[in-house]
Length: 356
Image 1 (tube, rainbow, N blue to C red):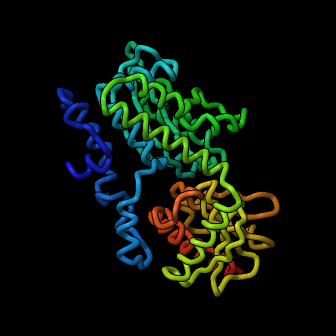
Image 2: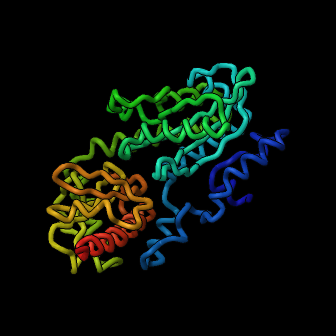
Image 3: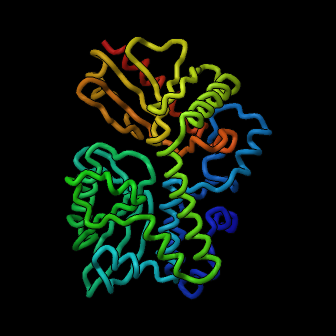
């Protein structure tokens, strides 16, 4: 557990001293993170043969905040004694509410559809139990009707008697929040920029590190959205070389197209394409022609985001955030997820193509 705490940069001794019950809840909430490599979660899941020198680069890569890191960031701060829980309650509109407990990556099936709440928090205000469901974004696109599905899961919690009221919170960079559809009824849209500013006003190394990590995250988002053609082309060439040496079943022609890096394979059926959409944190399988109507009868869609449009079927798998301007050798954790996503989407393409 000490190694886990160090990986997550948790100041447990200071933040949780004297809060034995909260510490118990916190460690239970982190149970899903037990299988984490000390150098970064997901290291044990590398699906490809990565040379040791590249693995060393991966394990020594600078910390770069991903959406899961934001989940754990929020979770730790809620259980700490920094005042973050009180500040969050005020931002949500329940000023004065007492923090009860929180957990992350909470999956639930409502109306025959599985969905996940990034962070689920319970507060009590004057005897009323309030559930706060948090969705955090860095640059990934929304899933289909994501806000509506959050409402469905929240109403289910109220129906089960787990809460009397609920609030939906979207946490994302300011630049992201500016593009959120007006039809989405989040009760609170909280900018990562504001969270960084809150920590910047605090004293101590803990607050300084938090503010620095969040600002670095915002800088990476800015780099992704403003990448130059030279950076995109260089990244594309490095990705092509990586596939050639580590995942030869796939190939990429380095065109420098920021729309997405196309991934090809030998037995690719007509009408199917895979793109790593770096700026959207997604690997998409695009399906043209009559095949797109068969998406609905796929047996296994767990972990897939159906983003189909009228003319194109589109199944996506979320991956970590990558940066056009950062050397690919420092982002092998992201590339490993991309290759794993391509492997699964390739099988799905073959399954759909074989359907009568």
